[in-house]
Image (cartoon, rainbow, N blue to C red; front, side, top):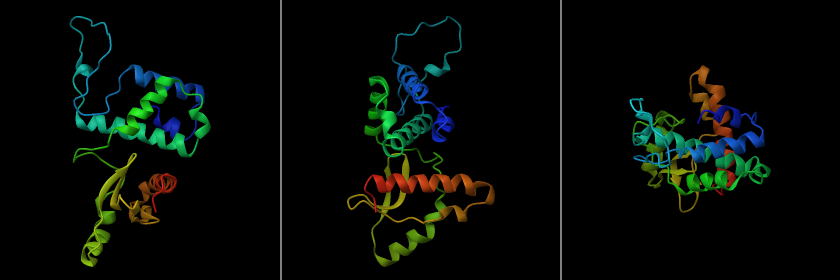
Length: 185
């Protein structure tokens, strides 16, 4: 979703946001692997129509992850913007919210595995059962989904190379805010 940077940095007016979500809805943005375009389109003979092929798991996961992020930001940071969205935009967000995020193994989630590797081993030694789960657009490596308990570094961005720290700091702070708003401890 090419509008994500504008949306995340709050540079997109609500009217543009509404039209953007409507456009994504009309385009039948694939949210699951194998999804295909299902609208009344006119085809041009001999034209390259690769975009009509069923969505691969990576593309669908990126689309779904982005829409789940939009949904969380609107719910927890800009709830007044939800009031101006059209039914099509709200329906697209509801569909994204209801669709489980099941990224393929090669899907690049923002948190790197090495960040939680040591913690994971420590909890296993202590006999504490924590396992990966997802909440909205976020992968929670060490979580108890029933008790809504997640174990994370408060400042995991310090474990990243200097050129990624600022971007990751913003991601982690937003993630922690959204998780608290969803009832996670």
